Length: 153
Image (cartoon, rainbow, N blue to C red; front, side):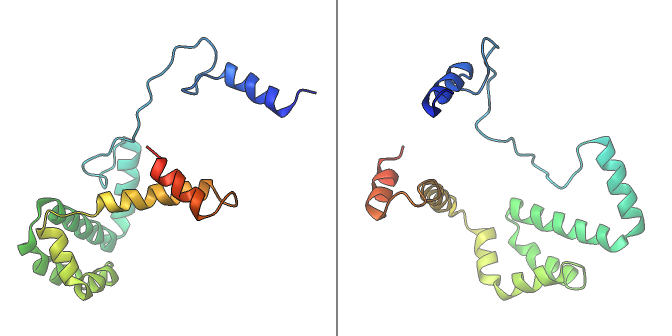
C-alpha cells in the first residue's frame, strides 16, 4: 500500500496547479464571482415565472420587495433626502422590523448614505485574519499567528 506522501505526490502530478486534470487545456478561472447590478431581478425565464406565481397570491410580498429594492436604489444613488419618505412608506409593511432598526440607528444610516467613507478595507483584513486563524486551529499560539499574518502576502 502506498504511503500518504506517495498518494499526495501522485494526486499532485495528476492534477495541475489550477485543478485541471492531465493534458486537458487549462481553463481560466476568475478570481471572483461576477456581481449583478440588480440582484433582486430574476435572470432566467423559469425564475420569472416562479416569482410571478408567488407575487400573484401575495400582494404584501410584492410591496415588501418594492420597498427593499427602493432602499437598495437609495443607497446606491446616495439619495439621503429620500430616507424619510422611505421610512414612512415602509413602517407598515412586512419589513417593519428592519425599518425600526434603521430608525434607531438613523445617524449611522445617514452617514452610510451621504459619506464616501467605507470600512471595506478593514472588513477585508479582519476576514483574512480569521481565515488564517481557522487554518491554524490547534497548531500554534500567538507568535505563529503573528508570523503568518505579517508574513502573508
